[in-house]
Length: 365
Image (cartoon, rainbow, N blue to C red; front, side, top):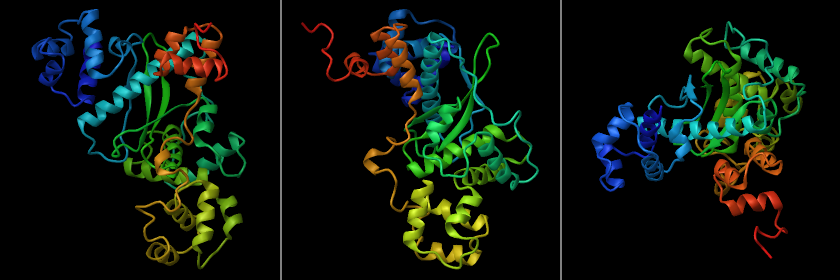
């Protein structure tokens, strides 16, 4: 697996065998690197360190000590993701999940357990069954009908592992399974691109949750995507609550009203309009007119974004992994250096997070 990790990291960096060799000063040669990747030879510990530095990954990532691999990864937004983009995503996710599993092991926490709202994935006969599925999940999780303040916090609270990182824009998000050796249970993971707006990230998180709850292959691939979209909208904008806010039937909608509604449900303006049509509050004609008038740019440009462009990815950030690292550090289960390695932060930054701004740095007299 060391060879496969080297290949993934090289592709993530956009380097050919020759390019990686050149970055390392010509040694090892492209032929030698190829042998590493094919598993014909194994790099020394010194060479592993040099490869890790050249590829901007950790030595522990290249060594693949936990033997994990990603399974059932589907890039949903565009089928035209490049090999480099796929390698980039795989490398980032594998590096993160290995650190996540390592800290859970140190704290003796179960990694695969999550509060499944269903005993088994639901077999849908039509895409419209996704509406009832969303209602059932909300009821099982006791969410009521109010808008969900944080999708990220909700999913982490239910035990799902959520990674939100900047990825190429052709990658919106996906759900995948982390396979582990020695018959250890699989670990479900949801990955979302932080480069997109907060409104879209929330919809993507709900969309990917749907893929964990719908029985695979019960619908065509295209219909499963439609069902997941219906689920996401129904989960974030429950029919009964939305109709209570807007009314059962409307012939016209005002700009300010729509902006306040999208802020209330924390969804995109376009998704809100489509949801109003789906539940029958507005007609096709009203929807078309809205997209031709007050909402004519909403499909490409989000009105009154909830998250400023300069802070993209800062809202609804996953926090559980960081909290577990600081918990293990505070309890003396890992060292400051190890916490720094896991969190990918400097020792001084981690120490500040542990002791607080008023504490003296280590070694102060």
